[in-house]
Image (cartoon, rainbow, N blue to C red; front, side):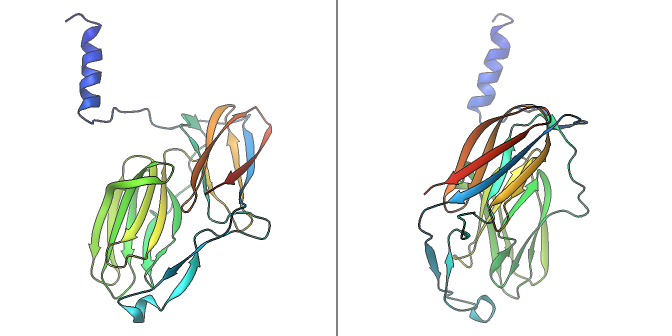
Length: 245
């Protein structure tokens, strides 16, 4: 085997074996000429609701209720949509993190039910006096095809806490095997350019290094969409991300 064919063969072997080749970690640098991305996530379709009928632990989980699958304001802005930039190699420093993120379970609901965490450790907590089996699934395509288990933990005791380590970026759908109506979403990110929209659906990202990027807007009911954009030095980029079902 010649010298050129050998590394190609090794690369093919790793891919066929299902191994993930290492990628360069995000690098923090001084961004003196960064741009700003401002946008709004909207939804113009009909807001559907799902009926939740607790079949067990009703004293903790509550009674029958209807909850919207997407929270939309009067101006069509989507609350709690996750927005992030993909594959950013370098840029501003990560925000300071005093404690690791927490995924709690209170009243048979995930708290928060939508959150963004950086790669690394986070804690799963059961604040309820009932058994929860917290099950996270990795999603392949913008919140779709969520089948591969990321974590699966039984927490039978109140105030029980277990730490897990998320090693790769991606969307994670979370449910409870003991209470099938529970639903939450986590976005694991590998760079600090992300946001969760407020009640009016707006978001802002600052100190973005000049360059070409892909912005992703995601919501659990609609899935996500990708928007290519170019950020220029010291300029403002406005984005309208319209989710569809």
